[in-house]
Length: 133
Image 1 (cartoon, helix red, strand yellow):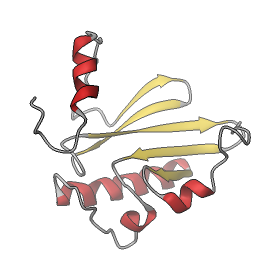
Image 2: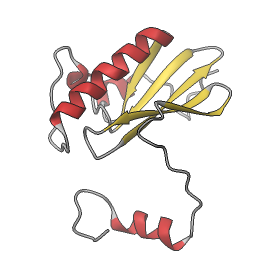
Image 3: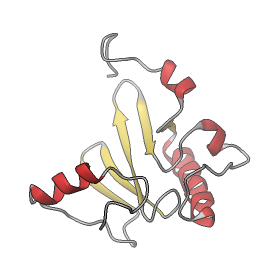
Image 4: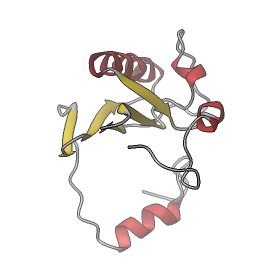
């Protein structure tokens, strides 16, 4: 990995390497990995970047939430119709990721929280206002 490899912050990646973090990779075949009861890593596959992960969290008072991270920036990208973002590794993979998230949200009756949606962010409870149960 070099400093000129895309939109990533080299200092972050360098810190991970320098601190010898113990990684457990998620393979292409693993659609989801349970961390603890109520929290799963979701493997979205390629799209915005080479491989995208998100989280599915089930809160007793709120229900299921899919944290889409950079896999889907905004509701506008989510559509329908799907709208491609500006920074993209794989356009077909991005569209497949959106459909995968839609199916998972429907199957689990979950909300989708986008990684960069300012309008959606305004609707969230902030840490200074309270919390989700």
